[in-house]
Image (tube, rainbow, N blue to C red; front, side, top):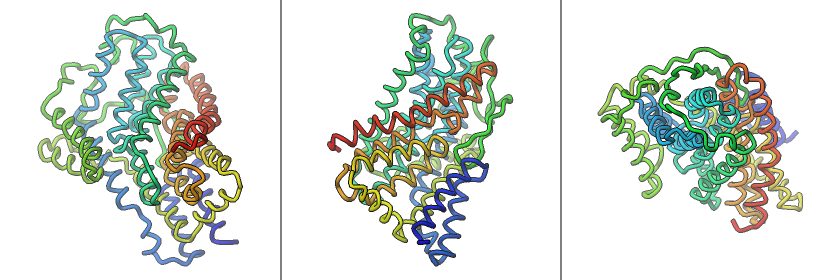
Length: 454
């Protein structure tokens, strides 16, 4: 058996074991790199860890550290409160506010599951108080997370653009972000009318502020237990106290824009400007902002390091370390050549998008993005399919299936849904997620790959 086949089997085992057990996918990937590299490829430890993505590590730690501080000092709660007040009692706009708030959170660096975990309990509270279909609100929140997830300074965007840059492929980070955002907006329009949005038109709320804080009739929040590894997520219901240092949403007076929150918002704005207009390193910028905020407001940084997305950091870095080994031994080139040898480049492109969507529905999107884009590199370098269009189609196909209740985001929404509707929410999200695994690759392939304009 060749080294190429062994490494492919090992990668498949990593995804399979992490999906159906609680073993962390990133840890599995590093162990697989060690075992395959040492006993089959005969690499040294230094060679194996030479593929560890130090630049991506800094980006992931920097942006999640900054987001943890923003959550810790109440800036995130302030953004949610300010956005929902803008609804002014129009019930039909509540799902769109949830979409935009979640999109903003992921666009400025929040990990997608973290953003969904913050907004889902609030959204389910709205669903109960104003009789909104929880499936509708849940899908808006998940799609919002995906919509913002591919901004140039976001986690998904950093992973995708980083892989493209490291492999010397043509890229267009702005187009990737805009395409993902628009695609998810269109999805939400469909969701709105499929799941009862028409009934919300014209309805108004007497007191929107009550809905934010768990006033009479508001559903209690649900806690969520997620394993630290793959896409499978265990659900449990329990009261979820607000993290230490944050401001409760039922205290509007405590959500004023104070000095610390203004500084945090300024830091986030500086991060966006520096990354987009001055091409400064996102990770270094984010860490700079966190250090400045820690100096100016030490209480904001208390416990923030512990709230960094270390699970995601290990996941992404582990997968990239293993894939880097596959690149060194030529497996990536071999796979890309095999796809190209199909003789139908467009069919090969559709196949890759379909694999990304199906696997991501059951596993981690961050892991899929780090693994499948490199697998498509040799295929893309042949020039028969546009690299920008292919990467965009693959990225969208792999992310919109996060609505599956087996994936982390879908599981978070299911766990926070009203108990009496939880089974229905699970079934509807499963149906929607599996439909997306079929529809999204076909649609994105048709729009971004077939015309050949990218």
